[in-house]
Amino acid sequence: MALLEVKQLHKRFGGLHAVNDVSFQVEPGQIKAVIGPNGAGKTTLFNMISGTFPATSGAVLFQGRELRGKKPFQVASLGMARTYQNIKMFSGMTALENVMVGRHVQSHAGFLSSMFHMPWTWKEELDIREKSMELLALLEIEEHAHTEAASLAFGQQRAVELARALALEPTLLLLDEPAAGLNIYETAEVGRLITKIRDLGITVLLVEHDMSLVMDISDEIVVLCFGEKIAEDLPTAIQQNPEVIKIYLGEE
Image (tube, rainbow, N blue to C red; front, side, top):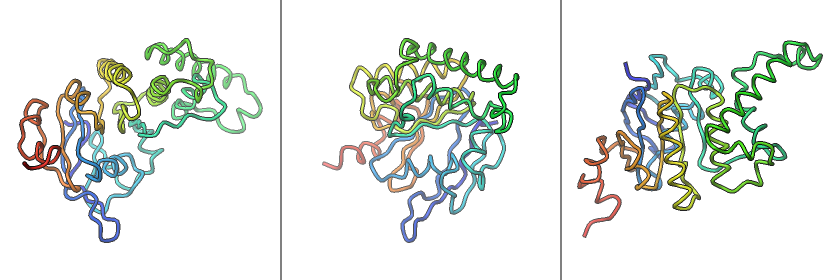
């Protein structure tokens, strides 16, 4: 069974058909990319999958469970984490504290128990801190654990963002343009980290404009244009697809 199934998904904003009858599957253990020119509907698609936008029609199944109608926090609790194109660090918080926030789904302490400092809440916070440090080490940024996250270099902030998403312990990780704003060296490093995450058994679905990154790390690629899927294939086949070439390079 596919981990994620997108079935005949549609999204309209008034008279604009942003996503039109898009279907595809993501298999466990894959890195699958969604590409397309600006305005193709990629981020809108991600917003529907993650529960940010309701779909006009169609279905999204995650591990066989229908996601339509669920809020983002409900989708996250099922094992789907997401990052965004624009990195958002919590102001005034260290890299470690930013990652700890991502463990909220795994936390069981309520408001009253935390307010009264119940003994079991101390152990839970210690466990969250230790797990968050492990994730920073996994992404090779543990030396910056106690540095204010907003002061880190852009590539380091991206690693903190990935660690924060992994703190959810997701089965599926959605990455919205993880190489946005990065230089060529930082992009190569992010590609290596994404592959490392997949090797941990976490399936990855990403939207990305950097074609060298997409071709290097993806198992399969979905191509959108004006909200419609025009191709879905292996990277080598996508590179030779005449319609995809026309979209990106234009007709002679």
